[in-house]
Length: 131
Image (tube, rainbow, N blue to C red; front, side, top):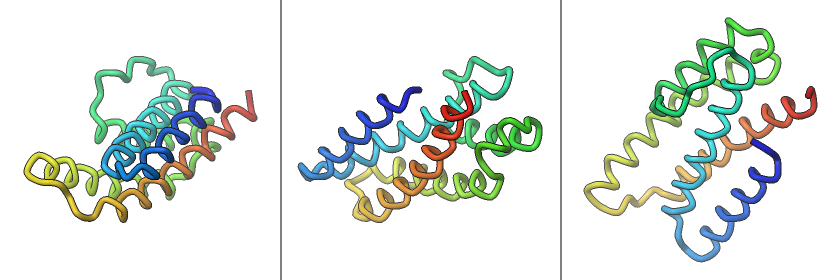
């Protein structure tokens, strides 16, 4: 995951929000977060095949692996990683409600998701600075 890919994805998210497609922006941000989590785990642990894991499993793996791998611990704190769990639960509720009807609290969830992007982006930036 390069910084160029992250910035281009963030530009797509910004354009979606400006055009009024808040749900699409939220889903793109969600996928960016998952890609960042996959990158952090795969580049700092011996586990490489993360494509088949679900989102909750990825978040739980990240929190568990912070204690096991000191390299990962220097990139993201356990407190920051624990903030991912409530966000993931809210996203699950969002996706379940999306099947039934158009959710109403998209902007609040989008702002929280962007905070998670910021936390993960800082960690990935630290990774790139070290290498």
